[in-house]
Amino acid sequence: MQSTLSHCAPVTGPKGRVSCQQTEAMKNKLFVVVLGAVLSVTASAQKIVIKGSDTLGAKMVPQLAEAYKAGGEKASFEIAAEGSSQAFSALLAKAADIGMSSRDAKDKEKNDFIARGRKLVEHVAAFDMIAVIVNGSNGVRGLSLKQVEGIFTGSITNWQQVGGKPGAISVYTRNTTSGTYKSFQGMAMNKRDYGPKTQKMAGNEQIAEEVAKNINGIGYVGLAYTAKKGIKAIQVDRVSPKPRFAAKYPLSRKLYYYTDGEPVGEVAKFITWATSAKEAAEVVDRVGFIPNE
Image (cartoon, rainbow, N blue to C red; front, side, top):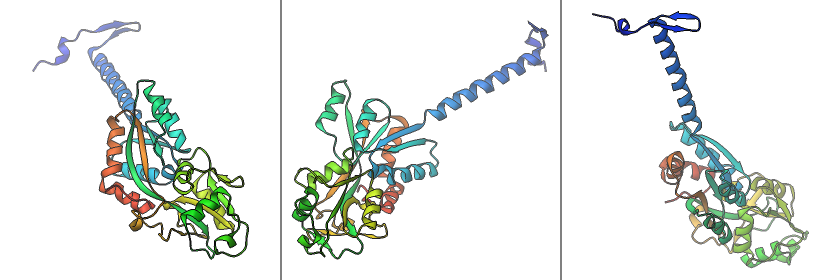
């Protein structure tokens, strides 16, 4: 059998004649280098950037990302929990693939996209209950929604006014970039302003930590953050913040993923998995939120 190399003519290069065998070796080496570069680009293209809500981004989404990768998916993730407002600014600036939000997008945020010929698309991530928390040693077991409103707007300032032991109430809230800050204001405070002495915290965990240290403290956190030692979640209008009471609890809400237009590729694949797969629902439930049905 005639060798395929017999059809190859030696090549003269800057360092003299190169044999057919050397030429073939050079071609093979070049192919490997090019293939490696293509694979490298493909791998980096699967990075998913997710920004926004601390409620979602501090626990649930990182754990979903780990479970997604554990299932054999090759995507990598960059997750930044900076507050729901950051979800929309990051998407608008094309600095994120997915925005996490613990509130609905505002009309202005939607219009910012429309003005640029783009559209925000909403995906329900999970359901949550905003729990009102007090120090574990506080004897108050529940408040009416009206009393909650009074405490957070500043018209009720002493625990004695709501059946507790005398003591000036210390109120802890989320900061103004938080979706929970706005959600709570709408659901619990009739959209009234927060009281002037409220202390603003960066995240759910910070509020829980402060309330755990202060016997006169009160705050609110997502359902997933109520297990911290030293605090207790109290009833609101005689309903406990437990998943089985979600339909009756007055501070229940939806949590969202937002995308700039309909998602495609790995982003679409992840969102579909995170909002519908059994494995994802188990993560959502384990973290302390209520999965999509």
